[in-house]
Amino acid sequence: MADQLLSISGLSAGTEDKPILHDINLSVGAGETHVLMGPNGAGKSTLGHVIMGDASYQVTSGSIVFDGQDVTAQAADRRSLAGIFLSYQAPVEVPGVPLYSFLRTICQMRPELKTSARKFRERIARISDQLDLDESFLTRELNVGFSGGEKKKIEMLQLLLLRPKLAILDETDSGLDVDALAVVSRGIEAYRADCDGALLVITHNTRILERLSVDHAHVMVKGRLVAEGPASLIDEIDAQGFGRFEGAGEKAEA
Ligand SMILES: Nc1ncnc2c1ncn2[C@@H]1O[C@H](COP(=O)(O)OP(=O)(O)OP(=O)(O)O)[C@@H](O)[C@H]1O
Ligand SMILES: [Mg+2]
Image (tube, rainbow, N blue to C red; front, side, top):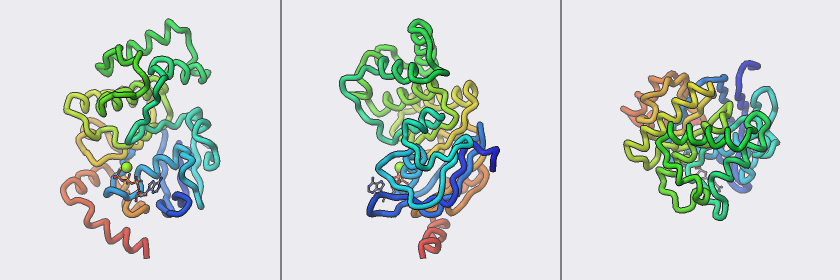
């Protein structure tokens, strides 16, 4: 549909020797919040990486259309410029690059975010404050020696700074203490309120969703989307687990 921000049709993908995703159809409208759930190893992170254009995966059929453009064959940096953001389950460490310079460089590469050094400093200070993030982090090397919770806060900082049209948050809540979880929730809320961006949240932890208004929930089993429904589907899964969907994955596999 033309009014969808993200339209994935008949997408199958995997690594060179292993098919992982099978015939995925998924649409996300501008400003909508979608949740993707599923057992460990179902292929959720893989889908996030394939949408982002991670070169370690190959698309064997189907297409990904983002903001009216077919991005299926586009490199990750082009997709990032087009407005797709992926927060990694395990963020990479980049020794030698201070966080502040990294963020400044990314912003200067984008016409809509390019700004004077003073204004940039002010923006960073405002967002750090919003996230309860000590500004001493900004002079440290990107993600090097950061705790799990600190890395997630830095990702929220990037999210609020870059203002993508679609943010895919993969396990942004994993391993967070209650205070950090609240900061991440605030970051997500601020993104929704300030940027009116769409969200695809991949999670096992429904607590992160409590303060979000979820439009659609999707369930992935064995590389296939086996169910889609309103936010109430999340509560059902919370109460009953994925047992009733396992059969759907098996049947689809046969
Ligand atoms: N680069 C890769 N090389 C080989 N196998 C891979 C690669 N990426 C993913 N896989 C495999 O694909 C399957 C799906 O993995 P994926 O990380 O997408 O699952 P997930 O649904 O995110 O699981 P979890 O809930 O545990 O994070 C797994 O069996 C995984 O080992
Ligand atoms: Mg995962």
